[in-house]
Amino acid sequence: MSAEAFVLSDATRQRFAVEVAKYPPDQAQSAVMACLAIVQQEQGFVSGQAEKVVADYLGMPPIAVHEVTTFYNMYNQRPLGRYKFNVCTNLPCQLRDGQSALEHLCRRLAVEEGGTTADSLFTVQKSECLGACADAPVMLVNDRQMCSFMNNERLDALVATLREHASADAATKV
Image (cartoon, rainbow, N blue to C red; front, side, top):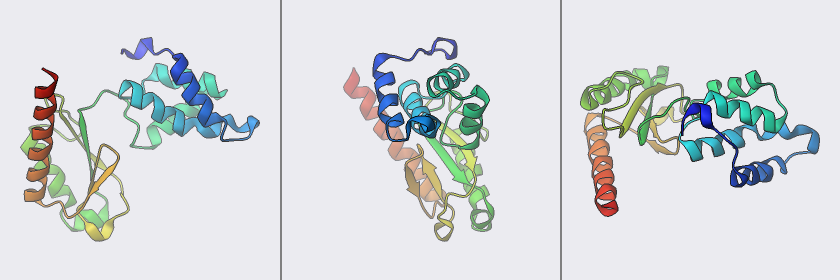
């Protein structure tokens, strides 16, 4: 779906309504994060056009929705790989090789930080604190799965496992 063509389907409108109903009628904007998450589930990222649609639906200025989208790293503002790796590079992780983990992944996958592999399987980006400093270096996979103590061997094993999983999925779709 292109960024220009985002249209609120009836199903999406119903999902938005469920989220908005959780708040007092004059506070619909409180559902902005949930609505952005719904958009991302449906199109894989939150386009500028989708931000405007969410803003219209919630009665918010578009810039207010954009500020939410750009503040949180869980909202993708462009299409990314099937697996998004957010590697913590904040100070505690830095002191325990967080930057090295990020660089290793980038070398292993032949991408620059923030880049996506040619097969659209992996996107690697740095992240601010993920709240697991004692487990450093840490990373978050697809904004859901925390991975701790990510040395080079564990990173390589994770990449191999996810590649196998993607290959198995592709084989079953043929």
